[in-house]
Length: 140
Image (cartoon, rainbow, N blue to C red; front, side):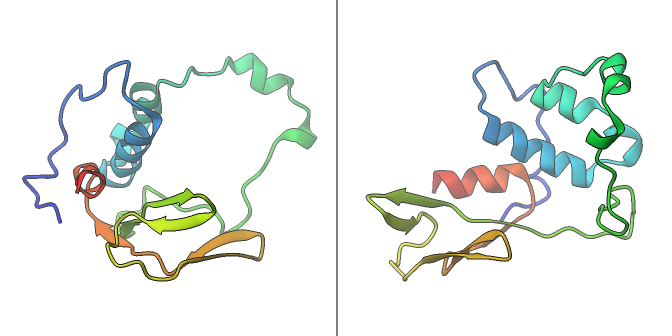
């Protein structure tokens, strides 16, 4: 598990070859730990490098295509009382066999679909506190 020193953000950690998974993990942790005033659009534009859409594109969409958030469904990331707990798990599917990459014991794993969601039962979930913790889990 990472300590506070291990989890200090590094400056300019991405180059053009950095993949989407490390960028997404870093953006996720930044999004849940940065103060609201710094969150604006810097995470997506700097970390993910997603081009912004032109404002005129938004105005041209028909009302039927604009998705409004359901009442009570949106998570308020600006709420200081909100606490986040993140866990990671890594699986590999090879020759129709599911392998838990974080568990050296080969416990039975199954995949089910319930209520429109895919659930993987029997995998190891490891709590992480920062993007570096996730990278350490992948490396071990």
